Length: 123
Image (cartoon, rainbow, N blue to C red; front, side):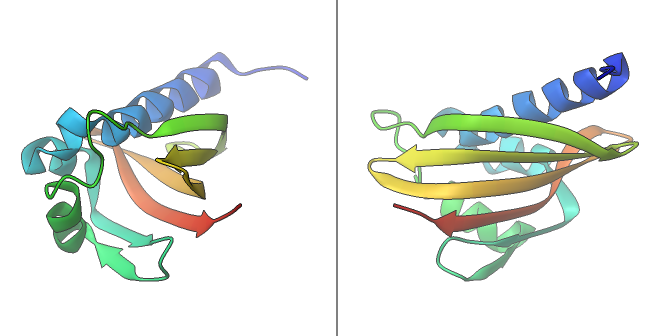
């Protein structure tokens, strides 16, 4: 299998952006979170609730991830679906609450932005 260098860089950029979104310091800042969300962002949360960029900012800025209990990520994988579109999957553990996560990142004029995210609880 030939690995395309630009695909590898795209996946790495999406992973770095996803990791920033999981950082408690970033999540506490609506400005920093907004810079990483696509204007058309939507999420289907682990609860089944549908979120948009405005509603998710309320949750993230309310301390959904505490510095003393950061999200632990494992099984992280990424793939370029098309030029400028990266799909990430991973398992997130936040204080014993385990959720399979799936994110679609889109390259825009301002950088990589999270376009869609979904979480599914798992044991």
